Length: 101
Image 1 (cartoon, helix red, strand yellow):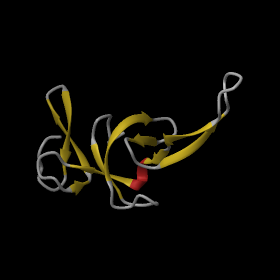
Image 2 (spheres, rainbow, N blue to C red; image 1 turned 45 degrees about the horizontal axis):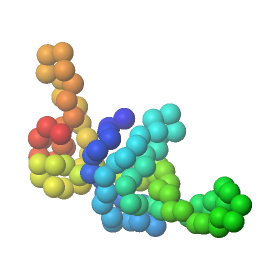
Image 3 (cartoon, one colour; image 1 turned 180 degrees about the vertical axis):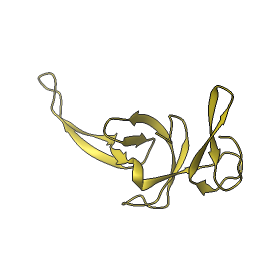
């Protein structure tokens, strides 16, 4: 996957279109990501003990990886990701500024 944990991303499709956020978790088999503070869903939680009230908890839901673009930390633009192999190491590069991510 071209997007990793702790990357800053821009959402390009969906209800949060145009918003930026930080990746919390990657679900690689499903090709989805969870972004901090975006794509919030409400989950109803039943009371655990007698006398306690049930509540609605806000939980971040997953987004499809195709609906986001990586924001380059060097140039600050949303960009596609390329790869560069130097010796034994493989690096991600920004397609716009050619800088290492």
